[in-house]
Image (cartoon, rainbow, N blue to C red; front, side, top):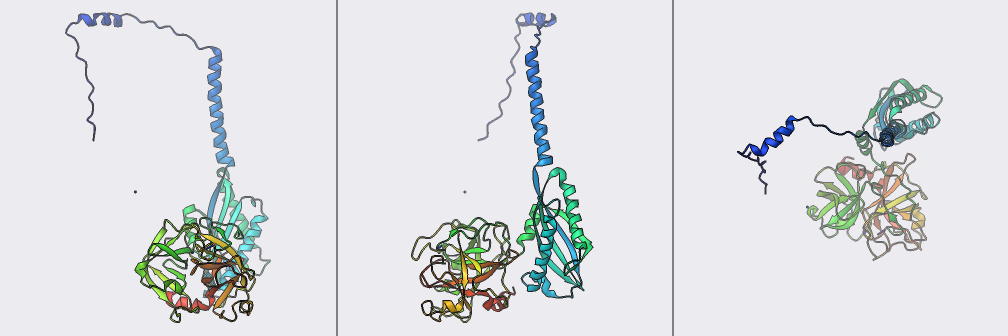
Length: 446
């Protein structure tokens, strides 16, 4: 992977009548005489053919109508809520990246999946997610989103079945949770409203695809696959990657601003193509980490504040920031994305590239044959000790992301440094986001 005479109206000319009535006498006499016309009946075979044609057209029309109404599936979005009882008040349930939120959300999502998969409408089930949790006195209200497909003729029946299955699920107290079936509320919502709900949450992807395809050693990203990825452009040319973490803030590498920190020299754009810029935004402020020193690798992190808010869409919205205490273990599969060079000093791609890599144990990365102690605790190695797949020039500041068990993506690292690209024993080194989580919060309030 690599770095847009009006014509006058013509009047109807009225023919003047001749003053010589004799020229019209013949015509007038003809009008006074009875006119007879000969009528020839159509042959039976032609009548039959016409009738058959009309019936055929009618049949096809009715057939298509029946297929559209009774057979052809349409997707339906639903928004709902219910209460989970006997949970002491804890405001952490509100925070979408907290352990409490993820723990309870995963249990509830698993219960919903199991309930629908074992039901009579399992073929119509597509997806279900917990969107938000609202803690109250001794309870938590879960707000959910559901996606189903059904023929139009079965729309109302499907909604009733969904509600019945959910109510039955909430009545079953065999697990560790007590839920209130009487608190269930369910309503159909438009696709537009559903997308607004999903896109308002961090780390969701509208486009799901296999990430393990093959940034050096990477492959083309699909549209909307990495909606938080941004291109930081200097004087209109791509220079670094960045990650969208809120409506106005992005995070990137400090070394991306070595020559100038003037916001007017930079713009940010999104999408999968570097050019032409998609959803271009201007920068109001650049915040470099106070301890960063040019030419050195530590504290290589910066924040970008946009002049205007980003309108979240399916293909552009924010990634989740991990908690400062969150641990990402060596061996975990992560993905690095960017428009960096395909190889060291090589060509640059037009389309965003993605590459699957793995987190490497810091001790291994600090071995004598590798980086010989240069990797600090605030850094993280990812890639392969055997080389080949790696970030490269132009990927700096871009995201290294990890999907949790709910398939919600977290920003684990920020592309920072390395020796060339994809060399043996020289994997990519990233700023460890958990180590800078409190710093990000202090500067952005996120």
